[in-house]
Length: 406
Image 1 (spheres, rainbow, N blue to C red):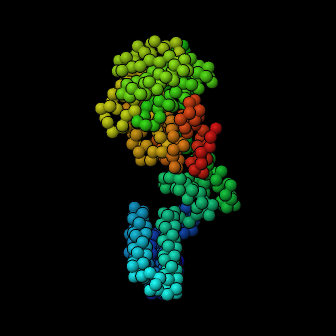
Image 2 (tube, rainbow, N blue to C red):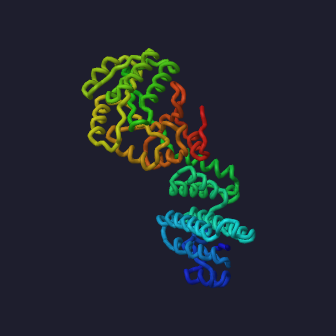
Image 3 (tube, rainbow, N blue to C red):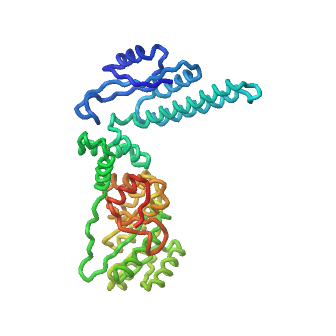
């Protein structure tokens, strides 16, 4: 199997060049418009590009025809379906070959070796087409930018965002530096860290406690995060701390927080309805910081979300931290943020970094939304496994896919 690309001012011109070099037996795998005269579509004009293949072996020629039919679909939305079709064709071909070729007792060694060779060749074709589909939406890039783009996408950074980041790097680095992996990665990490919004000050009025509330869906670790923050504030920063639990739907959560409060010698109040919040705050008004733990809610339950918003409104906190699990997909995080806007969050806490397979969703979320990141957590230990968000460190973890503990 031989795969090659041809370009021309029109599809007809590109096809003629293809036939002259590969012959009439060549199969068109894919066609698209490309830019000529400049990288990343700068100062360039459009041409047509054909990816074609030719092979004299009959089984692979049939497979190439299947590729042509699947690859004929146009547009970015059809590429994933095309590759799925390619894989299915390859699997079916291998299955048919096994059925048509009985056990070794009825095959000589030469036939078996040829069959193995054909199947390995088909696997190689699938791999080549997969790489083609993966980069078909990207213009020609310097090698180091290709590597950077692939790393971002492999770590679940949105493809459009990954393309934008690599374009930014291209614009900022000269031709001599684009060939340096070190310079490309340094520039890319700087662009990534620049996406994180800086935290705005939230100082409370003089002689008044700062009120901090945590909200979020069920199971993201709000109560554990509250305990970590309260312990650090009291034991490390020597602040006068208090707790309020509004999570009256989970008795276990109240008892968990009450046990921690007793061990840490931190006063705690429990509120059962929004109207109870004012009296609880008055009783704790001499504290430096009051942390409020709220009930976890599904963002799809509109009535319960409205009730939660009433608790937050009654507390009137200076900071509302929306806790999101780093193991949650970007799409789900978007939905949570939109639905929890009724609680007026002004910060994000990314929890459970240690449970996430990749961290690209963090970058997708902060790029799409305007909320800064306040803290990240990476375990259950109190008061450990939490730290203030650092843009440079987060960018490095997202790009490398590896956790960096403090």
